Image (cartoon, rainbow, N blue to C red):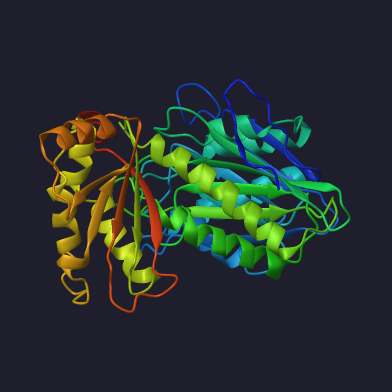
Length: 404
């Protein structure tokens, strides 16, 4: 497997064999594309999808959950700038109609398509605009690449997020995965996060695809947080066309993990108002669940996030965040070790020179905090790495004026 390549916005990244796509402007935003449709024409379509666990999940999530059960979804339509959430029975009817029009444009059945939406909550789709746009796709060129698709679904993202990985097939050839993602706010996943769509031309059965994708999601998208808020519309989808050769299960898992991690880091780095990528690594835990719980407590602490933003060498805020996990009574502060970059801050208390060095570490564009919990009898898998960003004045500005 070759390492993933994150896309420069000027690049063109074609979708893998078997896929065709169209990105266009329906008029939901003032300018630029805001809707895309992708269809899988491959000989053996396979799919996997995971969704938000929010109690306020939108109609797009409800419909896609049902359609994803077959493991053979043939395509997806994504609508930006409008989440169509908390819109009642009419909102559900509107989402069904969008699926019908999108499916009709690509020669598929509505039950074979998935739908995702992102944007403002509590407002219905502008159906006249969407009907006109989707019905016009029957005669349109489906020639959009991954960068165009990623750009069409952005909301407050500052740039499209794409990545590509090559895999070695069982016949010695190559297959690829191309991934796109969006989301820089309202991100504390409770399944996957934001919207992400991955495309591969590998020949793979739905069960194998699903296992590889869910494992990758758990290690990456589910370890991402910008602001502790779980979206009502989180959707992550993997589509395989079968237009290429088979790929071994281990190779597929490794490739999915790599591309999802690449996209996760891009999302964290572009968090609303963010200036720094924050990575927290926890080891020495009782199990992975405990490691993740502690890591998220640190990552999501507003005091830790603001200290990172200001490069304030107040390492005590990390100790505070660990201490909030008071139900984890097997964590002994005397056995805990806290490290920023390559500098231990606890229990080896830093002096003035070390605090200067700590400030330099925290001024970097990527700040890594490592914590060894030292739990007695800790498991071999008692570790977890999570990804986020600093908390800035710009985050407040973006969200204070989001609908106005």
